[in-house]
Amino acid sequence: MTAAAVFPEPDDAALIARWRAGDQAAATELVRRHARPVARFLAGAGAGDDVDDLVQEAFFRAFRYVDRFRGGATFRTWVMTIAGNVLTDLRRRRGRRPVVPLGDHDVPDHAADPHRDLVERDLVDRMQQVVATLPPMQRDVFLLRAQQGLEYDEIALALDTSPGAARVHYHHAVKRVRRVMED
Amino acid sequence: MAERQKRGRGAAMGGMNGRRVSMQVSEQDLERLAARLGEDAAARLDVERVVARLGDRLARSGGVAIRRPVGRWLAAAAAVVLVAGAAYVTFATNGAGFPAGRQAGLSTSLFDLSAAELHTVLDSLESPAPAELTAGPSLDDLDAEQLETLLALMEG
Image (cartoon, each protein chain N blue to C red):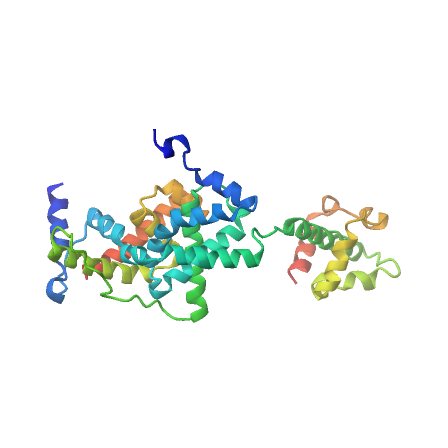
């Protein structure tokens, strides 16, 4: 019998309860669990070189205001929505359009077809460029749906909207992404 | 399905050697490409660095923020505005005028008060409201015209 079977890892809800009670180690564990997916969300939204700082800021706000977490969405999704707001705030403060760096890729040696992989990365770059220019709601819905694979009802809970509205935002986002990518 | 695969291959040919080829992007392509968005940045993220910096900030900030009962204060402030406004409208539309000493008080809008003055008003709500204020007219006592006047007054 493994240690994990004897001492199963606490779920997010248990860690959140421990953090509320003042256990900082619980917060650390939550960051280790969810930081990379949140970073992926932010980078997908066009955060560029600010990803590290924005991940930190998103978790900081999440832990400071954890009482606002209602538990309808998962903790990870909730932090992603905070991250989206943090990114939007940053852009507003800077007052400029997002700049998404291109060609900043490490090509993995293990890629089954390096050529095809490069081509796909070019397409991913193009997609990232257009996603970064979407209105915040469309951007967040698109990423939560297409990148994170969430259902509309989960997205609606996270973004405090209705599943129907989330579907409409996704439809508009896809239309715009397609238009640019097919251009 | 065959069409989806064909279109998928079409998408994969786009951008070869720097060329941008016009193409159709299927739903399948879109989701596959979207799933790869940000994967490099996520792989590069120094999680332990984030943990360390975040730990410092949280320690300095004192942990979970204490929620101030903003809703209760706002409700109390709104109640004051409504009661004062209702009294104003009733007296004004009935043509009875204001009791001596009351008019000056009501003509001062809460919006004119400073933060410190507002706090004083809100603090006073900790104790029961004065009888002359609670005995005043409620919204239920107002007719449609009086309600409209009240709304107009509140909207400035």
